[in-house]
Image 1 (cartoon, rainbow, N blue to C red):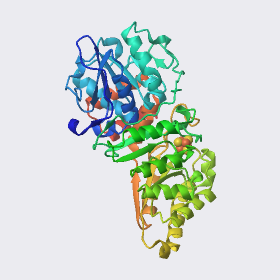
Image 2 (spheres, protein in one colour):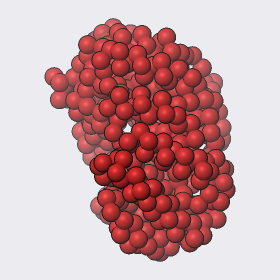
Image 3 (cartoon, rainbow, N blue to C red):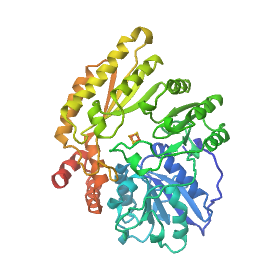
Image 4 (cartoon, helix red, strand yellow):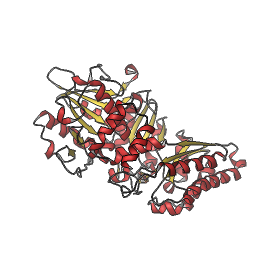
Length: 468
Ligand code: SF4
């Protein structure tokens, strides 16, 4: 894998005996870790600090990626945790490497952690990591390293949470106009051989369930000139571009950026689209860039429930967008829905089926114009309450009720032709729920899960008796 990587920058940080050895560890495999822009950005910053020597690590390896050095030989390990569930992988590797899990029993290595999972629920990890980064790591990492090299007195750094702090209410965000982008291009990523570039951070909207909106405030579109110069500078090293933003259309210069990429003879893809900001030109541009499937999050079929969750998207706006997709001959659509939302009634679940049927019938009516049949992919996911959002105080819906809703949707949606269904595993959603909401006492349960190799189902059945 290593020799298939193209590194876009050369770094001053070379190995020498006097330098502290830092490992940036992604608690999932190489493919997922290297697809993560946050991981790549922090790696870049660490590599530019001359006083340290930094390598990467990926689960399930018990050693570094670059030199195969065992984890225990590093002075400092920084975990980048985007998905709560990956914490279980960290427990597993700490057990296997015989590194003490609890910080009070551990001398070395020093363990730090950052990423959205940490910002959302640092209480859980309080007794494990020596420090946690609350907010955006780019803002904290240099100051943290300086203090690590000096006195290790982290209490003065805003955004750093240790077990001695009571309230990690000091989220920091990066104020400079940093344009995060891939620093290593590799074929082994979700968007193979692509340059990922973040054109905006945060979101202009405020859906009540959404961790992005409340934890990446304020909305920060990145400077167009900087984005274009990065795209130009590295153009010989990538094949495609992935534009990252909660909604690319919210960037005031999205069209110019897209047109510029096309002029370079490159293709690009986007992460997601809000239907109420969709325009004909957007679809034209995206089609020219080779996007054949458009992903949209409607969340629920019912306008009434959409209002309750503050997803400001009316049925009229949705159907206007569907008409636009048809006009532009967009055949493949992917829809995201949530089930188990607060105040949801069974009628709202029926509305999911109804709205998909309506979309299909509009497509069917236009079959002569469209000439081909496309596919609808429907992703159904349980609502999981997240800290720092207005819906945090709600519970995840009970398993039996979620299962009933799943089986109704499966049965009804299967009847619709050319539909692919993806259901998020309910037990895995429950695991995320507990990891997002529990405190430090829950770590013992997780250690037992790993030690006794309990499946998610067995674990959740047992845990629900105590915690639900
Ligand atoms: S769900 Fe999408 S539109 Fe709503 S707040 Fe989150 S990122 Fe923004």
